[in-house]
Length: 112
View 1 (cartoon, one colour):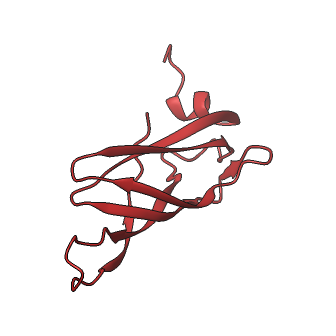
View 2 (cartoon, rainbow, N blue to C red):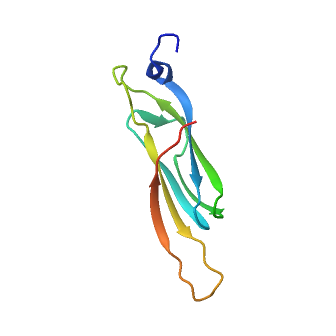
């Protein structure tokens, strides 16, 4: 932007990182945690891990955000900021004999 590297504009500033999670089946998200890189720190008392119970139907999208500050070296051409870890389980089927499948997935952040 105007001759300045984009990293210089973003560095030493506060930002909100955001990740959209799309359910491909009926699930319950039980825990989310931002696994932040060393150059990224939460702002103030911001908690980047939550035990929750977000219920999603297949095709639904949910957004998770965290307020952070980025402080990387000016020499870095590209700096990974981290990722979002999501723990989830499938929703119980309507049949009483069904079992619940548990899973864990790590998703890449889509920054907007």
